[in-house]
Image (tube, rainbow, N blue to C red; front, side, top):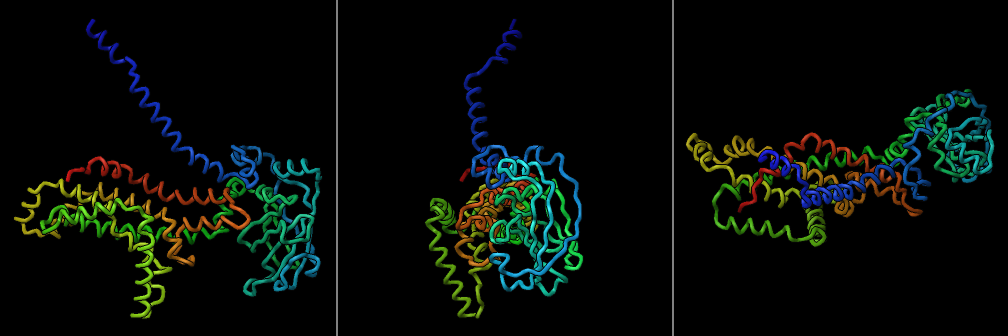
Length: 436
C-alpha cells in the first residue's frame, strides 16, 4: 500500500507546474514569432508582402513543377536609335536591338497572364549596348516585354556574370519566376541567348537579388572584421582589468569597481552625443598633429575602440576571478610566479567558460550595432551589414521582402557561433558567481 500511494503521488498533476510550463511555451511562441515572420517574408514577392499573404508561393511546389525545357536561340540584331527606346542613355551608343517570341512561361506567370487576359506568345525586346571597352563585344543588355520604355520593366545583365528576366505585364514580381535569360555569346554577329528556368534561382530569388544588389559581400566582410577586432580588444582589456579588480589589492579598488558598475545605469542614448564629440576631437587631433586623414571617422577605430572597455564583461570576469582559491596563487607565488604569469598560465585556462560568454555577448553586440556605425561613417568602406540593410529603404518605400532576406543572411554567422559555443556559454553563465 505505501508503494502504491507513493506511485500515485508521483503521477499527481501539479497545477502550479502546468501553469509554469504553459507560460514558458507561450513565451517561447511569442519570442519565435518574429523569426517565423522574417523567414516567411524573405521568400515572398513584393506583391505578396503588400497584400499580407501569410504563406509565400515560393515555399510551395506549384512554381517548380512542369517547367519548360531550357533552350538557346540566336538573335538577329539591327541598329536602333535612342528615340525608339524612351530614356536610353546617349552614352551607350551605338545600340542594337533584337526580339524573340516567348511561347512558354512558368505557372505563376501564366496565372498572371490569364487574370490579365493576355495570351502567349509575347514578344521580348532586347536592347544591347557597349559600355565597357575592356569587355569584348556588347556588355549591357536590357529586356522588356512588348514595350520600349526602358525605365519601366527593364533589366540589365553582364555576360557570364548574372542572369536576368523581363518584367511581365508591368509586374516586377513575375520576374522571379522566369524564364531567366543568360547571354552566352555577346558578339552582335551571332548573339546567343539561353532561355532557362532555374528552380534554385526561383526559390532563393530574394536572397540572390538582395546579395548582389546591395553588395552584401562587402558589408558582411566589414562586419566580420569589426567584430573580430572588437572582441579581441574586449577580451584583452577586460581580462586585465578584471584580474586587477579581483586579485590585486590597491587603494580605492572597491570604489573603482563601484564606478564601473554605475556606468551600467546610463542608457546608451545618453552617451551617444558625448562619445561622438570625443571621436570628432580625436579625428581633428590626428589630422592636425600627424596629418592623418579620417583616423577615426569613416574608419575601424571609431567603430571598435570605444567599445573595448566593456563594463559588463569586466563585471562578469571579475566575479569569476574572485572565486579562484587564494591557495592557488600562494602555491604559484612559491614557485616564482608573478601576477602576469599567474594570470596567463592559471587564471585564463580556468576561465574558458566565462571568456567564451564574453566573446559571444560582445560578438552579438558588435554584429548588431546599427546607430553608432551610421553616425560615425558616411562611406561604405567600413559600414557593417546592419547599415547595408538600410539600402532597401528607398524614397518610394521599403522593400521589406529583400530586407528580411538580408536580415536572414545577417543572423547566420551568429547562429553558427552560438551553435559551436553553446556548451561553454551555458557553463560560463551558470558557474560565474554574483558575490561581491
